[in-house]
Length: 138
Image (tube, rainbow, N blue to C red; front, side):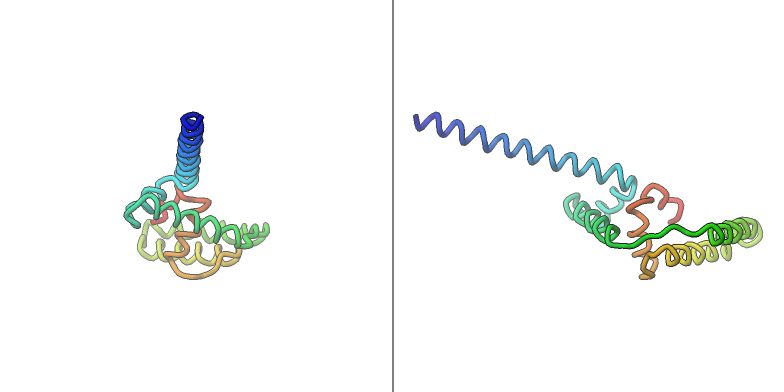
């Protein structure tokens, strides 16, 4: 009888370990899908997958607390016109155009409800919804 109990306990422990591994694997895949190349960048920056995943989870929690709002139609047109002008300026003055584009993005983010806490935090906030596009932004 005691051998049967030991086998049941071992089976339950093994099942728990397998279930935990499956949950962890799903979490990792979800983060990789959501953050794209930013996932590997976080792993490299933190030095471990576990630390990177904790960091990315923290970014998601922070983002969930933000009140992001859409840009009204008229302001959207104004931003689109400014963006078109910046693209035209790029040919003659790429450095100034990149600077202006960064300022435009910062202003747009503030108008949408993102906190203005500097470039690095801007990247972390953007990574939650736009992880794949950050490669071009950097």
